[in-house]
Image (cartoon, rainbow, N blue to C red; front, top):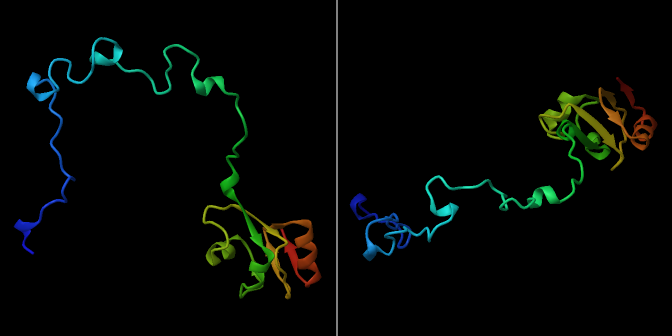
Length: 144
């Protein structure tokens, strides 16, 4: 293969549309804009969602739902995932390094999924009531 033999795939390249170049081009006179109206004029445009003065759809529909701005800061950790960690003192940094919570998480909560069979010391991590009972039953504790 030589550099001068490389060609683009058929149909991938096409000529730019040249408007206003005479009747024979098929895009002369009105240049594909039709006759009259706002969209035929230079500078004639309207906002996205504009419906000619009618109340737009996004304003006719009721507001619904709620999106929490702090959702990305909170993370859940399964109890079973904690039991496979090689260390017994667990905090947010350890969970981030193990890949159990995202890097941007500021808060973590342990939920009761799985089981733990050794004592764990959780620092700065909350737990659901059932998970707290399971951790304390295995000899673990919480340091806030």
